[in-house]
Each structure stands twice: as structure tokens, then as C-alpha cells.
Image (cartoon, rainbow over all chains, first blue to last red; front, side, top):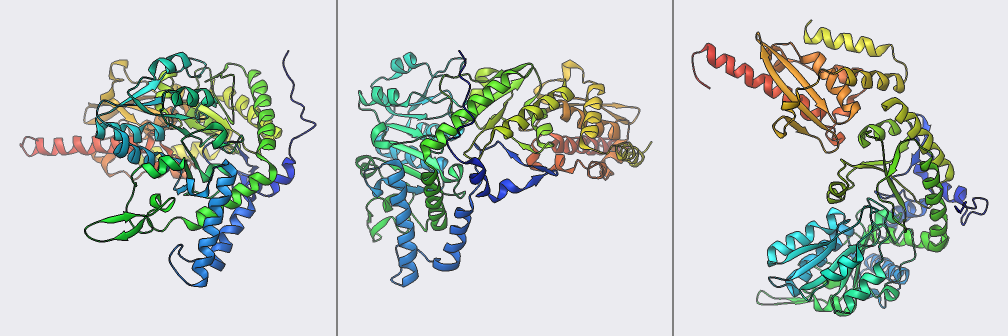
Length: 415
Length: 148
């Protein structure tokens, strides 16, 4: 029997939450905005905007350098953010949290450092068939450089990883496994605990791309026992240009640095440079201080609502949307995984996703069309792209109703 | 009709449409009526790659005038392509190369020509101009008796 979501008992007060987001009050083409492109980026609550302004109006200064008052304040704020994020992910220590520009930057950091430190010719890096380009290209570049090979865990036509194939691919040649926790293009939640357990049984470390996970579900790095985990600040209600790499201390200590420059050194002479300790070893140059502090405000905002409550709310939204979508003539889901989070990709008959997106836009509905930076996924399904609706804590059932009505109207025009 | 007259006519057609739906319905209809490119020209050589939708464009020279046929995998793009072809097809390379295109703006579709739109339309406009310039250069050099 189909479970009907109990919409009368919301896990959160969505109307109150929506008031925290100034951009959601805007109109597009004269209509209230329906923002369903949250997998691309989320809107920012007022508290994040206030934090950015507060930083630049009251404490702007460079971190880790000055003896003066402002520099101390800026340093404290920056390091407090690291502590908050360590708590959010349940890292053992704040030193295991490295600030990055985002998910892409974090993966590039690990691909480079791991490649230099650990990869020899003939070695294998394992990624999956549903990776975002940012979890493919840095590894390809590194493999080319080191004479290694990138191998791919295949998926089936439901958009789920073929775990028996994964087991078969896990040979002694594999030096690292890099997979996405949640697929940005399909919404699939991967069995990451199983992946990590199998890889660890062979002493192979695992990197999780959690760009589509941390904003939707509780993520505990110790419980997962994951070696590296990356995410972007801007997809969890924080500023663009902020991001996080979590790495187990023993791994981060072991890997060589990524970029050289200020802050990442202990002593520099022309003969030899001694690198700084964690986390500074991986944070060369002046970091995005305001971004890190703004990200802390975003994470505290999420913690205040409770990520479990967000998960419960979004599960209802996804279930409701799936039910409503099934009523649309000719709609087919691209990816139909048992475990889904945050996003639904679909097509309608042979209507080009671009056409549908254009006509939805004109109705004030923001969704994403195209290949979602995952061309291999589109190639797998032999499609030019998909239409993707993706949800956030502030998404409402009315948003989904307007989307469904918008799709019906657009499809009628395009058929 | 000159390129300018054709543009003015399109602007006048669209001026009767009050809302976006009417405009788009018209564009979609034009897309369906577009003189289709011969299947044999739907090759990578004729492909103008946009990020999301793709356009195939073929050019023929007949009696000193350029004839364009085209297709796109997206219907709205196809309609916009059709508008372009209405304006340019049957004009001389010289006129096409010199033409100023203002109708897209005037009918309120200027965002379709932004580089971020990725629908291949901007590339198509550039390609049409390039073809015209190339034909024009060729005919000039033939007049002067020199080989290109």
C-alpha cells in the first residue's frame, strides 16, 4: 500500500523558515518565485547575510598574523567556525577540518596530494558512473600525471550502483575510492557504509562527495568511518566560495601539501621550507575568512532547525512530488532509486528539457535543465539532459503543486 | 524585402501578442514550420553546439543569394532559428554581413542571445555572419581575378 505523507504534522514550521530567506520573497516575471534549483545552490537566510555584513563592518582583518585586536577577533571567528563545522560532522578534532573554496576545490586538493604522495604507475582510482564532473576530472588529471587508471563502478538503469561489480573491481591495485554520497543528477543515495566497509577491508581509503548530502541528512564522519569528505558551503545555505574538506588526521598528516604560500609554512629559507601543522598545511594564502564565518552561521542555522527535522520534511516533499509527478502524462523518471534524497530528474515524452525549462521559467518556476555536470550519466541513459527539481528546507507542498501545474501547461504547449 | 523590412515585419507580428504564452506559442509554431535541413546535412560539420540545445545549419548559394536551412533538437530553439532564417535567407552575402540585428531585442527575446543562454542561437548568428563574410570575400576575389 502506498504511504500517504502526513502533511498535517510538518516536521518544521516552513512558513516561519521561509521568512528567514529574503530572496524567497521576490517575484519573477510578476509571480511569486518557486525556487526548485537547490541542488545547484540554496538561498541564504538573513542570519548568514547579517554575519557577512557584521564581519566586514566590525572585524575585517587578516587571520593568523596580526598581534592587533582586530586580527585576533577575525582569527577567533574563523577558528570558531572550524570548531562548529567539526561538531556538525562529528570530527574528532577541528584540525581535521580544512577550509576550501567548495567541493571541487576539496576534491582537487585530495586528488593532487594523494596522487603525489600515494599513487604509482599502474595503480587504480575507483569512482562511480554517477559522479559529478568534479569527482571525475581531477582524478583523470592525476591519473594521467601518475600513470594510473581511473576505473568506474557501473550503475543500473534505476540509477543505483552495481555493488557486486564494485566488489569485483576492488583489487589490490585500487589505492582510493572516490564516490558521491548522493547523486546530483539522479538523487540516488549510495550505500556508502557498505562501500567504506568493503574498501577498508582492503585498507583502501574512501573519499565521499557530500555536496548533496550534508544539507539533507545527518552526516557523522566517525560513524561513517570515512577518510575524506567534501562539501560546498553554498549548497547548505552558506556563502559561495566557502567549502569544507574533512580528512582523518592520520591521512592529512601523511599527505603532502597542495598549494604553497603563506600560512601553510612554519619556516621558509631558500634551501628548505618546513610546512605548518594541520589544518594550516592545507590552507595556503589568505583564506575566504568571511565565507568561513558565514558558513558557520549557515550551519548553526541548520543545527537550530535540526538536520533530522530537515530530512523528515524533505522526505515528505520528495514523496509528495513523486506521487504528483506520476499523474503527469508521459513523464518518466530518470533514475528511480529506492533511496532518494533532495532531487528528482525527469523527462516528458520526447520534449527537450531545455524547452520545458524555458516555459517553466516564464511561469516563475526555477528548475535546472541540462546534463547537471554529469555528462556520463546522460550518456548512460542516452538523453541530452534532464529536468531536475531539487528541494530545500524552505520548499513547500504548494511549490510542488505549482511545478506540476507549470509542467502540465508547458507540456500542452510543446506537444 | 530587405533584412530591415523583414525585421520590422516580425516586430509588428509580435507586437500584437500581449503575454509570454502567446509569444512562445507563436515561436513554437514557427519552429514546426521551419524549412527543415536535408537529413544528409545533419552532420557534426553542420552542428552549432550550444551547451543544452543544438542547431544544425546548412547554407546554399543560389543566384547570388544565401539560402539557409536548419534544425534544432529543442522546439523553442527551432522557432528562434526559424526567425533568424526568415530574416536572412534569400539575402545577399554583402547585406547579411552588413546587417544590424535588432528584432530579437525588440520582440523581448534578447536574453536568448546572451552567451550564458547556451542554446546555440548566438553561435548561429555568428555562423550566419561568418558564412556571409566568407562568400562575400570569395566573390570579391573572383571579381578581382584572384584565387582565395
